[in-house]
Image (tube, rainbow, N blue to C red; front, side, top):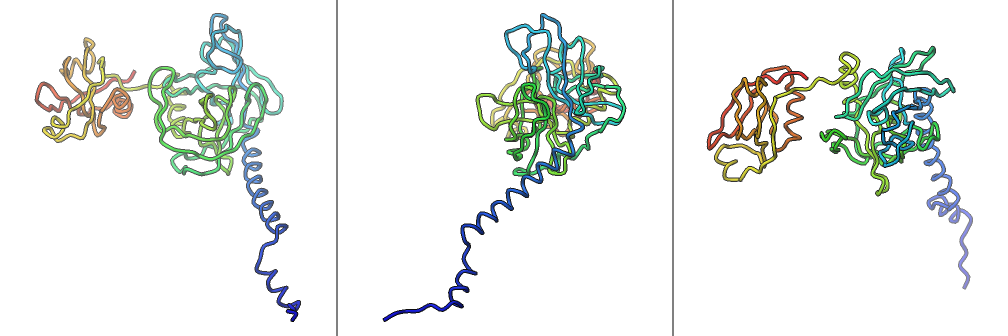
Amino acid sequence: MYIRFDDSSSGAGSSTSTSPAASGRADASLLDAYSQVVVNAAEVIGESVVNVEVEVAKSSKANGQGQRSGQPSGQHSGSGFIFTPDGYLFTNNHVVENAVEIFVSLSDGRRVSARLIGRDPHTDLAVLQIWSPNLVPAKLGDSQRLRPGQIVVAVGNPYGFQSTVTAGVVSALGRSMRSQSGRLIDNIIQTDAALNPGNSGGPLVNSAGEVIGVNTAVILSAQGICFAVPINTAKSVAVSLMKHGYVRRGWLGVGVQNVPVQRRVGRYHDIDNTGATLIISVEPNSPAFVSELRTGDAIVCIGEVIVNDADDLHRALLSASGTSCVVKVIRHSELLAIECKPLLK
């Protein structure tokens, strides 16, 4: 007995299944959509990205891409991007550190001299200014709106290869990274968009081409672990650098060391600290001295910020700078609240 399938049944079956050719076309369509996002973002930011060339003192130790090494050199380079029509641009502090002369190459081939406006080692950011007509500033986005998994694009000049575009996603938010000054940079963006020496100071942009971070570091021994300073942090740093030439932070005038806080002590004083900063020195005539903070006091809170270690103390002083605040300390067995006004320095 023979079983015959008519043409209509065959047609119906084919309409409900996906052929390899159709699957391939669907994959190509998805790839084209992703590619278009990257292409558009790169085109939007492209004219704002610059190459930063730095002449440094011969005694400075840097290699060809602004990374530390044991070989003395007279020049190195990095990346940057213009953020105002009158020629202000961002780069990294470690790119322009020890600079004697700075030159900037624009996307159209122009090469101009740049002036250092100010740099901030604590966030590894620096602001330069150039004078040239028809500059195209980048549009700055809002790094607070980022989400893990979001597509991002990095543009820079790794190893001297200008206008190199790499793409990836936001791997994580809220990371912390130690700057060259020893302070902790908070709320760092982690991305897998490939960065290499020379990308330092270049923009990290979203799918709309808006800058959401300043590329600053890469873990060379790892794959796809790169970091960028959030643009919201960069904006506040830029305002201070453009106004003062440096970032003004709160100064208390104490030397501290980290100490643990035992659970029973925390329960007794009704505090959530796992640690504190023990004052080991107080500078004469400092805000701490005037407020009668003493050697041996353990700082557990400044304002609303819980202080578990020295990094928390730096963060608290940044937000409390120039204003009176309450410093809570454990002195012997007592929890004291002392009013203090950190100075701007």
